[in-house]
Image 1: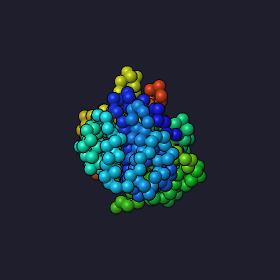
Image 2 (image 1 turned 90 degrees about the horizontal axis):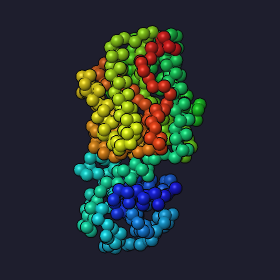
Image 3 (image 1 turned 135 degrees about the horizontal axis):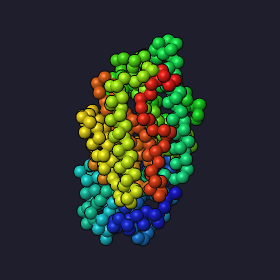
Image 4 (image 1 turned 180 degrees about the vertical axis):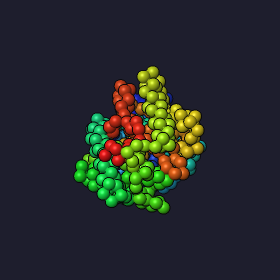
Length: 396
């Protein structure tokens, strides 16, 4: 539901005079989400919706697509010529010294930057300072309803159980035939999802030895994809319920095909686990102290553990991402490496913490999902946190 009063309250609290939401041919999916555009919506002409901190919203739509914003409150202006479009935008932002748009200074956070530079220049030419709508996007795009949280928790039960099934599948095949392919394990996990009516945008990552050292490895594409005794296996999987608005569960765990795990794997895993736990502790401390915390702060806390252990160069991606209706949602990410994530972590949002160390011979990643309750309590979902590499032939 589009909640105008909540948006206007947020604008007043942040000292922003208005939020200008602009889209052209689907370039700004964030605006479409905030404006609750219908599923499959497409417009061929530019449209804008201005939400003032106080007062009546304003719509600006093209003459051949006059109804695109009819589901929203506010006054409508229709344009045809480009001169009328520019005049309409000027009228919208008149008197607003500070206007939020899907813009990021110096493109520090490209997940937010959905408005082209020319449109930002145009708004600035009318005397308004354009500021980032990043925190507003996090608030009105990634905050989860109770139903969405429950959908995530239900999916998490299935994704957690998928690991026991995958480890057992590997163990059984090793004992009967001596080997199993990465792709066969991936297929078994997909069967598990299908049996429990979950969906996913792509199959899981199953990477053996060096293949697991590639953070975005595609299962079955490595030089050696056969899992045998004495080998190390990384499994990253994600899925959600098929109901509208459902939110993903996204987990990564590791196992060793043997009855005991060699020290070289345990050593690296322990560093990754300590970094993961430092990230969780960082978020918990901030909310317990009732102080704002941004995604970049969590990334720094996690990364420092790995760097101090001497593996900094082998941790080559951000610490985590927003988790919502998409695996990589549009809310606050845990990142101060690839982007400048200055957005706050908000109550009723979810994100992953997933540090990794990727060596030439094997890779370790430990991924958990973290939910911030409305009262600031922190919950790690998806079953027990992995505290040791799974000894597959001993445990299954």
